[in-house]
Length: 270
Image (cartoon, rainbow, N blue to C red; front, side, top):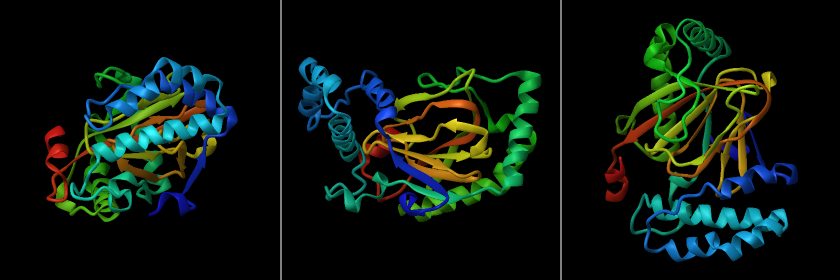
């Protein structure tokens, strides 16, 4: 389930035309309160550095953002506290896996839209970085499908891909998100409250243009096929890349983890 070598997911670096969206995300950064990184973060956030980034070639901008993002990730995701190498930290990686069939995806979208037609979409459930969404627990058919079928598949995929046991992973907030060209088109770069996150595409990629899960540290956008989930640590800075046309439906889930592999700092954050 290596995301970058799997035909189930298109992974590419942002090109020159996409650079403007990434540069705008620089202004939204929040400095982490971490002793070992604060001096480096302040240097990049300083006025001279920001002025330089505005006129620097895109490869330099991408490199600067990537270096800072990886620094933040390394400091916040020390899965093995005695080890500093990112090669030994599976939480710095992304994975993809097919979780749902085309028919299952279509049934969830139909159930969601039927519910929304009667009771509407929510847009304020999360304190920051809110989405237009409906919790899976509010959807009668989709909720049963998730609990009986989809949840076990996702838990196993996360456990297999990141070195956990199945019992370590607990999905606590699962919801269907709607991105539309005439509505919410994107979600700015952020970190999630939970340690693990999944994002699963529910409709055909041909129904929209753009979109995908963007990871700031390496400038890559992940665009999976229908029914395929992108799995990653919610502590990696990521965002919903904007769509330019059509409608994109995804199922997103935040998962808590309890494992002896995790350092005390990560457990405290949850």
